[in-house]
Image (cartoon, rainbow, N blue to C red; front, side):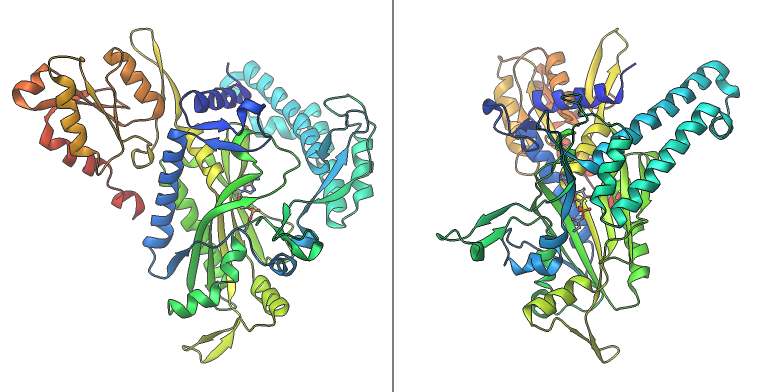
Length: 511
Ligand code: GAP
């Protein structure tokens, strides 16, 4: 049976083979946690961005989109708290000289214990079949209970140490758990230190600290500092939202799991500005709206869950993650945060400029509260790719790999194929291509047998293949093959556009 790790490996290798994702600078052995999107990946990514923008900006009268710069005045990051507090606890192994996130070492240790519980459960299922009661087993089996107590104890100590910023406590926990370095096998650890995740560089020619600027670690601050510009120039009335899609940079210590955790990635964020006191209503609204957006991608509901934050960041009065069942398990896909008026008040304080909004309905000025939705574009890409990746057994004892992508996200919408490379079929096929290429991303493919060409298109998720054959020359009909059913229908050329238009209509999906 294929494990989750095997699945991830298969997806990574498929992504490389078909031009979705490449390791950055691969010819120099790659750059850790940095990836490039290839010819198919760039199309898929662009389509995801457009779909998000349509749902968040175009479908809402009171949300507009901006595109702010990556570089911002350094005081922005002082005000937001990132200079002082945007850090992870790190620890080095003195023998291997490898650096780890202390919290991740502990979480991985917990995961190992959790897997022991899963193993015991699997044994129970095997032994008792349909009569197996998992809940009762977990509540009574001595092995499971012992392991669950271990997990609870570690979690309690870990949480207490993190809450108190007690780095010594975290090191003691690592020692007590006898966690060894996966590379050297030794338990010879340094003290735990906080490590700021922001990348810095210098602006201009002089390299002194006054000129230090940062690559933004989130796109949100570009929205906060522009909120009055947008409100005034767009005559926006509260409640209103500002959205943006853009790159963010974090010097992640643990860089693994493909495009899940990258050092350079993209966020799709929206800050919703509301009247103070109304933030919880909007927080609940956006929680639901964002889950609905994910479900509109056609991935089944069981793959998503909310994970409410117990310990809130200093700026938040409510926060939740939408987690997705990635090939490596449930992990954060999107964050929804009620950020209070913290950021705007901080920017008022540090800039000395008033950032108040005059609310004509209640005749009052105030600093708005903000509810934020923040989803990683690359994580959305990985979620969609992994849900679409299907290995299918076919009737004739063969199999195919097909990407069952939502049609509106597929990189290539239609492949145009002449049956043979002679008898005027390529010319006729190019006429069909000319007809469609203005509206749809098409691929012309005349190499290899039709079967091989269909497999190639299945592998990149092309929903329709149009085959031009000898009958086409006689009556202007073609066959159009459906990716998922593999069924072919003969239609007149002039009908192809109407079929595609109908299938690509996202009205129903988005309403
Ligand atoms: N403005 C709020 C904010 O940045 P976050 O939870 O730190 O919140 C939001 O990030 C989203 O950005 C995450 O849910 C995730 O999808 C994505 N993200 C964060 N760090 C990432 C990384 N290193 N690589 C890829 N995506 C990342």
